[in-house]
Image (cartoon, rainbow over all chains, first blue to last red; front, side):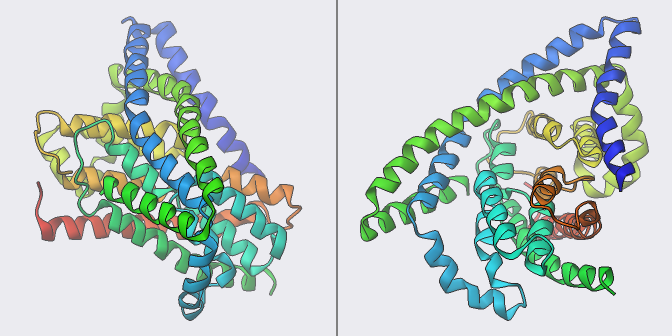
Length: 180
Length: 193
């Protein structure tokens, strides 16, 4: 496992190193290319700001209105039916919307139930293998005029729910294998 | 869709805050949310600028076309239209390679690039099937090393730390494949725009 960590630390510097070699030894002026690309980067980051602003404000309102614990309470029996630990519900609800809120919830779960418990492992797997899908999809389309994203959001949300289901199954098997 | 999401979240929150008398909380939420959107964008700005620059160099020196050749057999199935019309195929390849390498910060600007390219010359407000597939891959978050989760677990003194990548790879791999498959199937049934 240490090797994986080392390799992952190498990826980023190696990419930059490769570019540096190309710029230094290249016959064309590749630094011009770099600057041209960088300029486009400024454009796209400001183009996503309005979408981000609307979304972050709405999510922040949702979290501070105090409705989330109530929704959790009423929907947790459904999770119990699917054999997903109901303690994970706040995480399941927040993960598609908010990165910072889901990290905070994730830490809370690990603290309360222990990182090596089934709930802790399951929460970690959910956290690592799903993303804030609503942000990602809104952001990807925000620099174009596209407003109708058709089946993108339904599928992405379904996948993030499926991810929870699969996580709880895989985590059970994983813990069994580890301690047998 | 995005507008509906925004509207639904706001209506539910305000209605509930008034109903439960939690107006102070929601005021705070509105103000801090607007503030946070700027800090988030600014914190992304540096990465966006740098990675767009790096990828432009890769594109200009032909590395991306080389990668595209290798990945083509797989990507041709996932993004049929882009590879058939040879429009946006390079941008998609750049985005997917960054995704596979686990450079998640670099993926966003590259994906924006790819979608802009795919949208060039179109005058519709509907997304094409290829764009949708790309956004589903981007949101399925396949990463080689889930650093944040491992860091949090280590901080909590967990005995299982790096081993967690095994279930994570299984779950995120399966989810990504299923996402691609579903997107292709639904796209085929509903037709392209």
